[in-house]
Amino acid sequence: MNFKDIHIGSLLLEKVTETGIPMERILKNFTDKEEDAIMAMYEAKSIDTELLLKWCKLLRHDFFRYYSQHLILYKPQEKNVSPILKNTESPSFIKQIYTKEIIDFILELIRTGKKTKSEVMEEYNIPKTTLFRWLRKYSPPKSPPAPENSGQAPEGGAPNKLE
Image 1 (cartoon, rainbow, N blue to C red):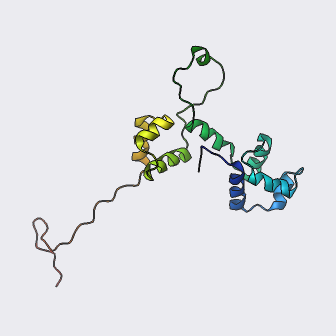
Image 2: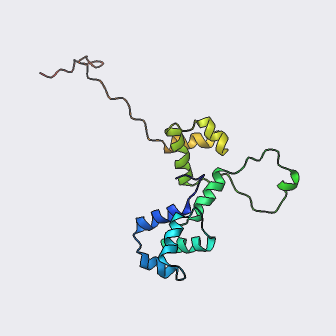
Image 3: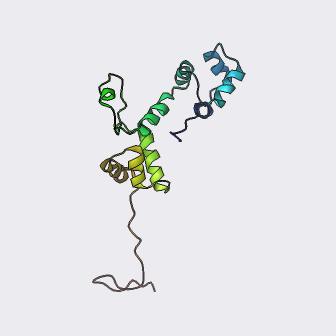
């Protein structure tokens, strides 16, 4: 999932395909739309929030969360913020709310080598302790190396030979 460049139409189509909802049912939900308009929504990068809310209800999926996750990941750095702006009553975005999708996205960037740990911490403003906790918690366990059967005797015993 590309949280930086969200194409809501393709996400709608993906969910419709996944759930197998027929076009007839979609058209009943969007009584003022024709099939061509529905198909155009699948092609659209963004759609009206009222329409998106209808899609959320129909497909029982929160499409708005993709935008929330975008805000969490790509929130501007707060360097040199004016004291006047800091004291406003407008809502702020809490950086410490990381969904499983965001954690998976970040860890995938590191696992595939697309970004280093340092780049992830810098670009997404993720604390070092948080990132390393995710790596410990969500990384697959490392399996111990397989014992080699070289024919030599294990400590305190006879050699392993099959005859």
